[in-house]
Image 1 (cartoon, rainbow over the protein chains, first blue to last red):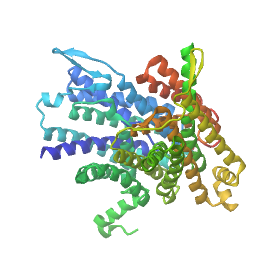
Image 2: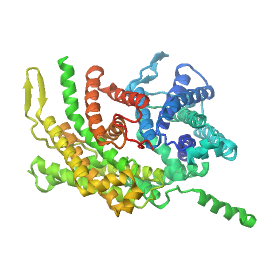
Image 3: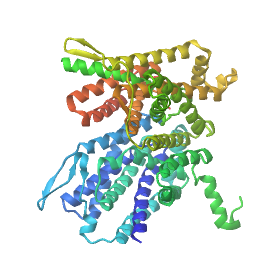
Image 4: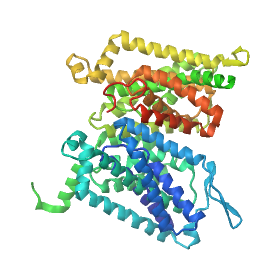
Length: 301
Length: 292
């Protein structure tokens, strides 16, 4: 049973990663930097619980704040570049953060043992959960409380004016500006929220894996972050969740019997998915179809 | 001072390969306004394919390997076009971006599978030649890499500015609808753009293998990042920009390595990119309307 709890933990954290990219994608910005904010949240929360002895909840909060502050700082120069240049700029930024942590040493002696990040070796012994007697089930529930909260928040955004404004900017910036939407405020705020969610996810990631290093936050992770919302579909937060469950649950775990061939299939399936369903698995049409299926004949407009 | 000049010269010579990769990214962007994220992986893949000839003729000369890598790059380029761009409606930039990422992962995994992840030795020409001017030396194989890359760039520029296909490519990049009205077939031009950039990419991959001495699938990620940096620094859509930027990034990278060591080198290359993004987002040779 512990294995399935562990899988649920992974799905939860990856959903947070995907949601952080989702909210930025709604405004039309493709950000490959989410893995960088994820890393910042991970190292910050880890250092606070291990080196400063904080409880995990304030440490996660601090990780969110630092992640969102960095994202806000990135959001402003990101306004100067549009479209595909932003992809490259955020990719380079994410790689820059990874290289920063590759060179980052901050060790403190605690009880005779040197603890803290050590450059290429990474940050070991992030043992808040084991030291405080949390079981796998408890950690999983803890992670999923945050996932559900974030999903509810984003779902509420979607039903409010903010969500409409975000999508308006994503669809057509010129039209959005012409109705008086402040592009800067919308884009930077979306980036900031994305950074906060990624920071939260990173903090949780650091604690359940107990060992993080620069290679855990590479371009592949950044690619996963945007893959979940794109493959899942941008019409709803459920698309991202669905894509995470599909990728982590079905592809990675379910196809384990394929052994080495699994990795080959992964890239091929992404190409196939994008050719067959360019708008994502759960696009706007699919959601309408689901609603009709469960909503019955109430709406026939 | 001499160390600095040596670092610059070695870096610029190697930077010619970055220039080729940058040209590939920028040409696809200029014509289709899309980024082909799998380009560096396709180049490395083409270089690996070049090694296949050594399985058939064990004593094949290095230039045969390079030639096969060149040709294989073109084939892979066409395959990438077919799987990522031909069937997806062009109005879905996210879908094409994601499918090129999928191809990047696929090509990487195919390489890892067939070589069991082991680095493969790559033949080099003139690696025993060293031109010396006192304490300053220039490696023969790096000069060959530079020379071949320059030949590739000249060939591309001749193709673009002196042939009918080049004219069609430039027309499509400027005004796709008007080009179609003139009878230019969009799908053919796009496919051929990918084949041409694939050929250049295979050449670049072969040259990188020749100068490093070995090929490894780990080359793909840094090459993708540096290639994209070269493209942005040079200006998206500008080929002279990619050439100059490639040499620039190559030179800077080596100088950073001299002063700050290998682990911090890439950080400074990123910083170079950010400096450009802040002060000159269009790149060195900004192309109007390329910021989309």
